[in-house]
Every structure is written in C-alpha cells, then in structure tokens.
Figure 1 (cartoon, rainbow, N blue to C red):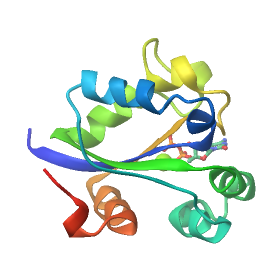
Figure 2 (figure 1 turned 90 degrees about the vertical axis):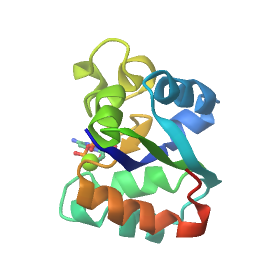
Figure 3 (figure 1 turned 90 degrees about the horizontal axis):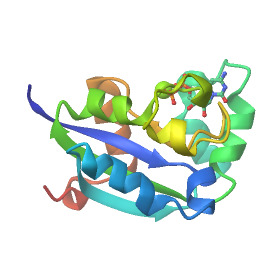
Figure 4 (figure 1 turned 60 degrees about the vertical axis):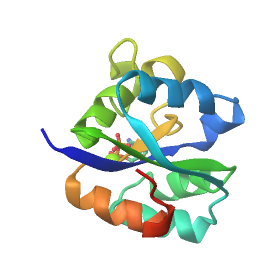
Length: 140
Ligand code: CDP
Ligand code: MG
C-alpha cells in the first residue's frame, strides 16, 4: 500500500475538553505521522464551505454552527494507507456504533459532536488538505 496523506480535524467538543493530545496519541499509535498541524477558529462561513457536500442534509446548520463554536485543530496525517487507517482509528460516525478503542468510541459525545473529522477518499483528502494548508506548510 502506498504512503498517503489525509486531512484530520479535531472538533470543538474534543478541543474544549483538552483532548487534543489524547486524540493525537491515537493517530501516532496507529502509525500515522502528523506532518502539519494548526489550531484555528473557523467562521460559520468557512465551516459551511468545508462541509458543502452536506449542504442539503438536515444536520448541516447544526454541524456548521458546532464547527464554528470553538477552536479546532486541523492536521495532515501521513502513513501507509493513511486515509482508511485514519477512518479505522476514528470509528463509526455515531459513537454508539463505533468499535471499542476507536477515538469516537472513547471520546465522542454524540453523532454530531463526535470529536474528529477524517477525509473519506483520495479525492477528498487532496481537496481538504488544500483547503487548510499550503505546500510550504507540509513537512514530511
Ligand atoms: O464524519 P463522517 O465522515 O464519519 O460522517 P459524515 O456522514 O460525512 O457526516 C459529517 C458530520 O456530520 C459527522 O461527523 C457529524 O458531525 C455530522 N452528522 C450529524 O450531525 N448527524 C448525522 N446524522 C450525520 C452526521
Ligand atoms: Mg464524511
């Protein structure tokens, strides 16, 4: 499997509870390397642009309000099969369905406030990394 990069966001419910380090440890323990990282406070418009694929979904307004409510930590993770590996470490969207040991099983508060975002395909990873980071900020 090839080395890949994927975009991760540690969401406001996790940064608020001071879980940034605990979440990053899950990534690192799974063999993912943080090659870019920054803490930012998204505007509602920026959150809306990032999640525009969900614009027609009933949870879009709640999701974008939540994502703009407090700071997030956006990161680029690198590793073998990083896109799927990150999804595996995250666990299912609804923490009630997330496998034991996953980030969402351990930390998520609800299906909406579920601690992490992760790109779901190579195309999404490319687009989402470019949304937050310039090439100069990616240090392998
Ligand atoms: O984040 P993931 O790719 O697992 O799930 P998604 O289906 O792409 O949905 C994006 C985000 O919308 C989720 O992580 C939740 O924060 C939120 N969501 C929600 O609030 N209610 C749902 N029924 C589904 C998703
Ligand atoms: Mg998704």
